[in-house]
Amino acid sequence: MTDEGPPQAVIGEGHEKELRLFSREWGVQAPAQPLLKKAFTIGVTEWARRHKSSERTKHGFIVAQTIAPVAAAIATVLAATGISKWAVIPSAIATVAASLIASFGLRENWSRLRHVTRELGFEVVQFAESYGKYRQPIEELKRIDTFMTQIEKLSIAPPAPSDTAGQPRP
Image (cartoon, rainbow, N blue to C red; front, side, top):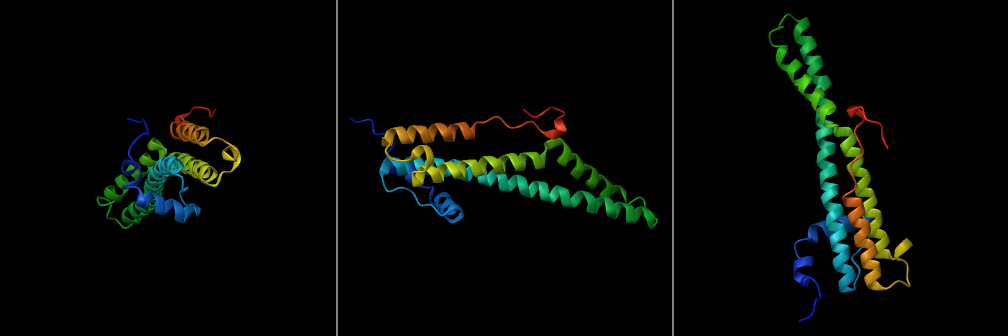
């Protein structure tokens, strides 16, 4: 019995969508060597997870940022036209949207996730193309260990504190 890691099917299957997205965004294909391909797939999967989260956060920010002033304007128009009892609804929507932006730091989260996604993408490209610290001659297993360490560092880096939290940035 050999210790070759997870079976090939476990690592490769189910990640075609992420691999295609990464290839389209960054123009890089998976390495041909099986061990490098496994590590590449793990890196791309982490990149795709962060990319998806960044896109979700961006959409939430854009929606809240758009709704708040529109609802406030509608409330003002309704109040000015004498239909003030209906002005309460858009006023409440504007308040909730503004609170979401301030409380959850949607813009800061989006910016942080976008930065992490970009850094993960650069790391995967360097690994796949043997650039930087992955340049030859380096032993294949050492190259994979270095790559996995970098992916882990980027993936679990603590988030920068929000500007709205009143804490200074490090």
